[in-house]
Length: 298
Image 1 (spheres, rainbow, N blue to C red):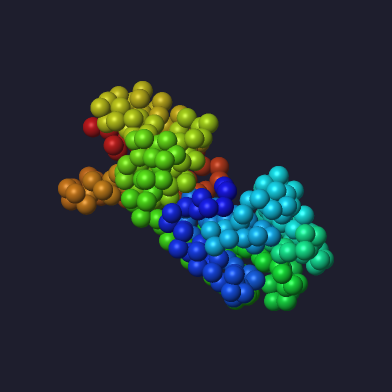
Image 2: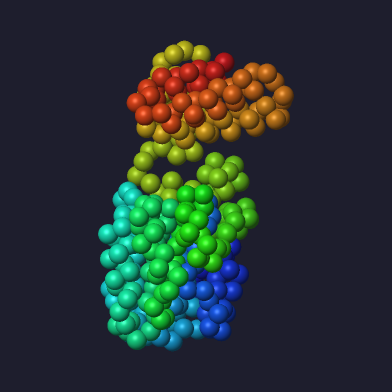
């Protein structure tokens, strides 16, 4: 994402951060906290672009200086991203710290981004503490997390925390329509936790399972009474069993709130238990889905 294209629901936060940077009042260690799929990484990308730029403007990076050209080419020597497919270990953190310890090759700022800060092992987090406490000159550490309670207290105490809320529905729907999701609706947005980028990613995924296919499948299930449709859906959806059970739970809860029927409450409780059961390794996901989907058949 180019500078100047900040997500509208983060524009105020972004502008405040830039003002503080230009006034030399920006903290060197920032932790951005918020739900998955609201665009935290885009906010951090916009900020890091500006921090690396040699001629930043009040709107962000100029995208024209040598530093910006290197960044846009993906090989800026003073920009580091630490991530791992699983846990972020101590060796990776030490590698990043070593890069920060030297002088900035471009003579400006050094920026280290940790996109999934809660994936750090305890040893990795401990290794980062000294750098958080005593950073080298012109160094900024930008951490991102979906799960605040998984961040070590020692890390939390050394970072300036920015809690980012869900965008409002109108802004989310406008964004989705701009991205080509013409049938964007609040119901569709709600299915993905009111996180527009999560919804966008799901619809653009190569997977053939999303909320649209879920509602189509449930519609067919509700119109049938035999076991063939039920078993077919359970087998087809077993790899997305937790999401299916969660959406069924939302359906049952909504129906109970509207109708106050015991049957809807029973469905809701069954879904709650199913979500818990599906957390256990080795569970037969297809059988768990059969159990809850059966309750939605007429």
